[in-house]
Image (cartoon, rainbow, N blue to C red; front, side, top):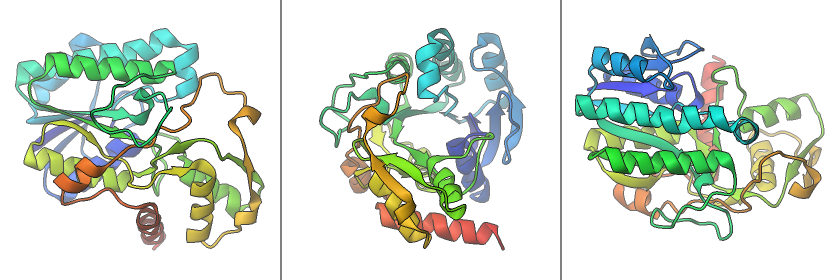
Length: 297
């Protein structure tokens, strides 16, 4: 199957390209700056409608996975014009190009479309974001539903993985580096979410693609957990000193954008529908540990 992945240099896109390539899919890896490690690279800017149309026409994919986005929550707040152009207009450009090619679209979204008042959000719950990043992702979801007939919207939460991607170190790797250097770190206790191993969501996405499942799915990890407890579990899994991690509240940090208190996702639909299930946090961390060990061999 020919699959075009946007944002294929990122944590999610690069892992999807890696796994899909191993499964003998024909992968075209779209990127704007950092050249992707897997798949046939094709450079274009999602903000540029003509470039998007030409890229999709050239590749002629059966499936497009749109993962490219501005995900820096504070940057989205301070540079709203850029966030809108990438996250909303970029998605519009992709959706329209996909319509011309009759491809199946998988759009990667986020738990931040919810306001965080209750947690354990189901796919049927109404989005109501409290920051501009979440607002742009909500608007992009609406565009996908309006413009595309055959689509899947896949929401994730706090992506992490065993390798850096696009020059960025994810939360789990950042914490591991701090603990290995025996540095003290402060982690918030009052933010709850569903941490998502990139390998796990990539596996689930590929099943959705191969089975052509439509609608909205929460493809996050299966465990609702706060950041502090997540950090402690990382330390325990990797046999590092958890006493280096100090609990603090969000009020002690001065973020530009508001963060939802509890944006955790209910994964029951994915658990019931897919053979590749959302992993519990202990399973996911053990898998990450195994991946890191393999990369050192």
